Length: 226
Image (cartoon, rainbow, N blue to C red):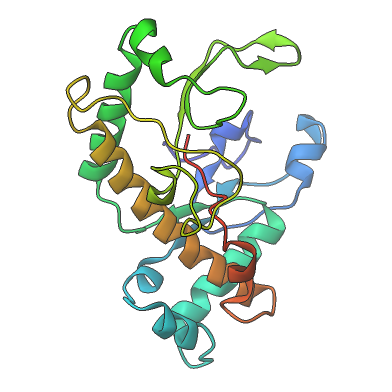
């Protein structure tokens, strides 16, 4: 993205520059002609230090250590970005470009399949996992198609061993129909879940709670990928 014109206001959210500089909400509330800021930048939080620690117990201890400068910086940047912007860009999360690219390629291969094949795993009134089409937005049919799935705990029917909500269960195409699809979706989901759980600990500490504070609210599998 090219540098912003320091003598003119941004014309859209696309003009926002990527960095850790935060700006007032007036950018999104006031008429464009009244905005007098030099440059607008989306917050970026580098979480490499957070992801480098292998065990959750070690993460919890480090997040509460006032002398751990790297994690302290992450906590402060997340707090500022979440309170001043409401969103931020996560850098150095541990997923390589190859992994992200592989996931995207697999998803494109799925959506290129015929409607007939995709509808064999269509989401229904009793199961919110699977292929999605024809959703409504403001009572108008969307053009989008989706594929919803969750963790490996939803690959089978509900049992006493599966701590999850409702009767939802993942639906997958036969391996011969789309080789490697399930494996790639699962690998991507597991890594993103790991990143999300680590960030929850940062949010908890930024709010003045213990790192494991949010664990009590995520005992059932309420996470989902689309």
